Length: 431
Image (cartoon, rainbow, N blue to C red; front, side, top):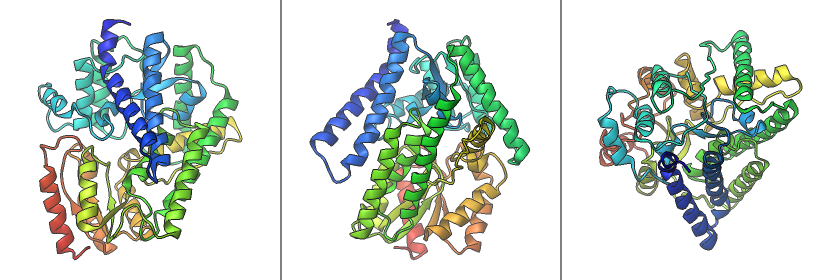
């Protein structure tokens, strides 16, 4: 292997070692939830090993995103990695994060740009990203992500790598869906050109029907999270996103996992045996879960009896795709990937996307309070905070905006966040 590729894969090998240890621990010391956590760890392990295999054997490897129709990649047998997923690496929290953040501070990039985007550029600068054979950038939901990809595309390490971006329309009407369906077809043409593989429509139909089943099961599981008390903590709810919208999307084995998750949730409800005992506050965490959430969430559970019922990524209002014809198949994938994905769904258009989701979740899930962490890079969400607060007043649910960095603990410390939450819970007489 090229010495440069060895360095680029160092962190992937670290991740493989971490998840091998996690799998071994879950197998040797099983708990009543190991049968649900073990497949998640094995899936991450499998995807990392595929990345290494692609680099070592010179196979096609795409740097892409969950909004780029992962069903297409599965159907064409093209492996891909999430371009900025390394920020979330390390099992719980990236062990390199503080060193990486110091590296980010030295970049000639404005400090108010989303930390996630600056981290992506730093990883390329530091030579710790696997080198893909093609790049599928994202052009939504913000200007920052467009800037990142332009910087990556022009970077000396990647400027010779072919890139293609689907062009997302602003509106959500029938014409916009038709336009984006054509963009999905252009993506297929690009992938065929780069890999010399042809898309088999029957295979794409098969994969999409499998993801339809997975999305339906995810929605069925979320119905169980309406139960008081909620059957599981936030981890398994978030995992529902990972199995259907990352590499390996459409794997029938994932469908079995969703069924096992529902079975376990139903059992816990019947036996009144929730994973989080003594639940007093049903909380909607309305944003992405930060990498330090594994420190904060257990504290909220133990100190205040909080159940994080849903977050932005565990909510699942996804479109079932009509696979009867090629046209309906591409239109369905277009809608699913343009209008439905978390974060992009809320931020790409009008503020009502935020407000209607809050209102529906609060009502459907008996939410006691809404917490918006306010990641510093989510300028779109921050611009709608006053509207979210007003909506929560209208529906009579307490609302807290914090202001933090999803990755950088220095921005607002965990202790400061705990203090804000404690004051909020006490003032609102929650718990």
